[in-house]
Image 1 (cartoon, rainbow, N blue to C red):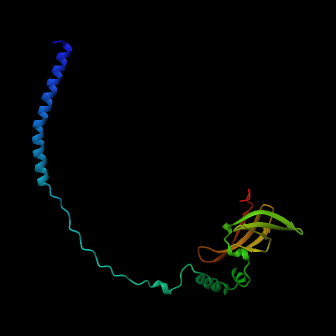
Image 2 (tube, rainbow, N blue to C red):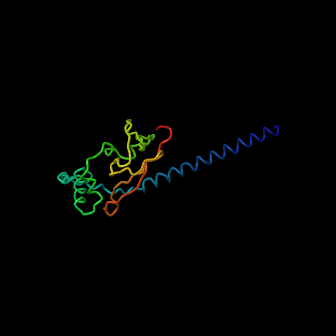
Length: 179
C-alpha cells in the first residue's frame, strides 16, 4: 500500500472506532436522562379563583368638570370681585374676534402703515387680520402694546403656580417666507 492510502485507511479506522465508542456512551446518557426526567417534578402553585368584580357607579358626573368653561368662568368671576384685580377690567369688556384663538395659532406675516399708525398683519386659520396697539388677541387676555415692522409686543394675563393672576410680556415675530 502506498503511504497516502495507508493514512486514509488509518484515519477511517480511527473514525469508525470513535463513532462506535460514542454509541456505547449514548445508551448510558439516555438512561441518565430518563432517570432525571422521572425524578424531576414541577412545583406549580394552583391558581387562585378570580375575584368577583363589583362595578361601581361613577359619582363624578354630578360635579363640575375640572377643565370646563363653567369652572373657569366661576374662578374668573371670583377673582374679578377682588379689588385691584388684573382680570376684573378684562371681564367687563366685549371680547374681540382674535381672542377665540390661541397665540400659537397666529402668524405675523407683515405690517402696514395707515394714517401714520402701524398695523400688523396676522394670519389665523387661513384668514388675514389687521391689528394695532390696544387690540386684544389670544386666549389669555393678550393686549397689544406695540406694533413694529418685525414684531407685535403684547402682555397676557395668566395664573402663576400659586393661582395669582400676573401679567406676562410676549411677542409675535414676523415669519419669513409667508408660512
